[in-house]
Image (cartoon, rainbow, N blue to C red; front, side, top):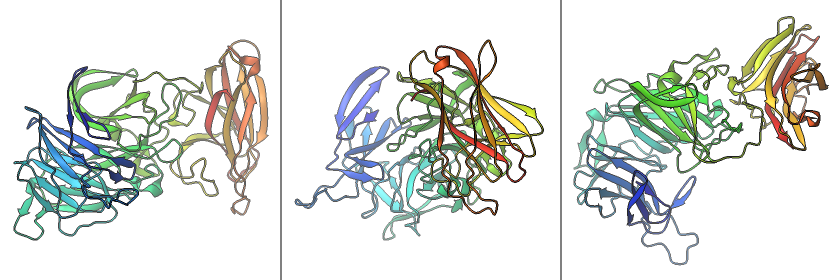
Length: 515
């Protein structure tokens, strides 16, 4: 089932559109990413039904522009006969959730909204629904999404923060006689710092999330994230059973989506959220996805350009090595594509414009080879907060290559590329130093013949010797590849220094193509 932004509801069987229905949406409901008349949909296969969310602003002020927001409503669709219930509202004027959920065990709509209210709406009989709210709300910051596991444990995150509400609905109690009716269950709010915008992976905090029902795992995306600001994914491990008091996250990890096969950085879909998750019998192997032998939690996410579907093994993501500096951050040197944690499935034709792979280093040094010329250089991927770095490259959370080459050390990373047989081909990148002067050299190594140096420069130093900021903004360096069009060559990025005080050259946003 799909919905459009107006009143359209589309029932699809395989590749066939079997029915088109019309929702009861009136006017528009506004969320952080836009407005809609018919908004979200969740299919309940247990009861052969579906729930949609709609705008329900029936009586706006006629002269108002734009139309003032109303609280919105839900409708239940009986998929046996395609009948649609009357609009169903939450408690009082509580708005509908941006991304709601359904508890199929208890026949509840879970409506955790952006004003901080968390309503449960009993739709056992859609013609006589009962709405309950969680006492103590509204909570701050606001809710964005909600998900529930087979244990009855539900989670909802705070948009703009790392605050996560967990509640055990296997122990829920309802008080319909209270004013307003309310529900209670063991619950607590946890702060997971890695999902907070300040950590750099989730620019909007908790936004898109989906439970791999039955796996005790939740898949998350930074809904408004881009290649240069956030754009992270994450996984949270929930308790394996309910009924044991206040639930808590057992483990969690944040990571980045690697560069796509057409060598473009990953951008999230904004609203509506472009992810889902399920416990399915799939395996990632050799860059592809096939049938496996053991069901596991799998996350699915599409990019904003709608060119690739990312498939994420949540078990493998949670089991992957962590950063030495943070126990819940994936080691930025770990290569998720090569290690079969993530795979890409093309869904629309795309035009390749960047011919160097993993130019944003979100797959560690995947597709690169590193090496030592002399001394003991430290060659790594860094995502630490960088003092004195301007907003682009992002100073927090954004991965970049780092060559630490003190006291005459000399190291490099390189990649084999095929330079397109067209005019205007260049290699470009951003590079910056810290305190000690570092010499950066870019060399082309042809398939035959001697290496050819494209150029050398001193990496712009963003800090003074007293560690104050120099005010230098990392420029984009570029060199012509016109002598190598149509050839497969190796591009080497090398650094060396005689200094000892943070003699580091950093690299990001590598590009090969037409300028």
